[in-house]
Image 1 (cartoon, rainbow, N blue to C red):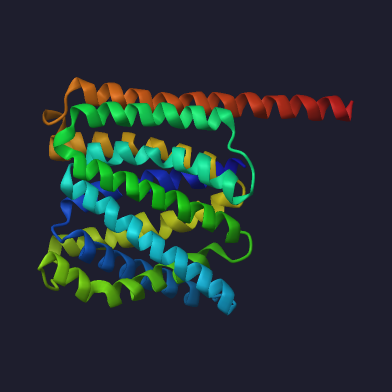
Image 2 (image 1 turned 90 degrees about the vertical axis):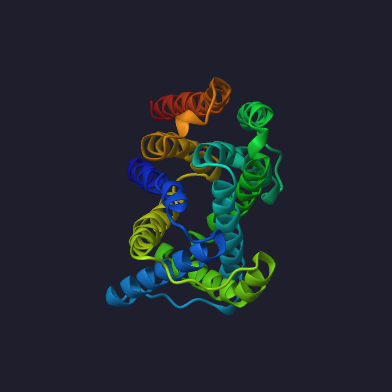
Length: 300
């Protein structure tokens, strides 16, 4: 469990940079995600072949991973769309609704009732998001896109949990990102038509950012998260992901001076959201201590 939590938090730190890089890259969200998926799939593919860890999967598993890859593609497009429509801080904080969607969808996927404590903590997070929305209406498009992105992230996290113990995490990452890239390639003409844009090659700085985003913040982080999911439940993973805004907001304030665009109401809403993380951590600690106590009693 200790190793799993370490893998999870390394992944979260790396993901904290994705929003910053997304803001810095000048490409629109469609092309940004297309390049990111190509670089990430190529990197993990080369690694698997070099280490002789490429695992064959069934057609059924390929279909399952392809569906997840498509959901990941939509998740990233809405996520970067949210950042470009508002700013890093607003988009990333509203993405914390991920825990609410997970607390509802994960039990339903197992035909169980959602836990009351998890629902309550998630509603507290949503209260913070509503407060931010009420005072940051200028960014309503970014907030709505961020909420859609969080919903999609909850869905693919649950789907990944169901297959993470059956297929090697590196293989999962390759097929999901590879099929997502192929599907997005087929949809690019439609994207260009809707947005009245065309294909662009990245500038030198954009290429550097894309390589960092694709290799470290995607391939490495995504694979680590899948290893962690073998030991950690999805709700814990997704609620812990609410720590990501802390890293992203601090970086956004330093790099983009976003504190000049945010009022005290934003920080109050953020504090409400982060309080749910602290409470959840304390509840997990209490539950673990109770289990240890029960085990000691049984052994005695």
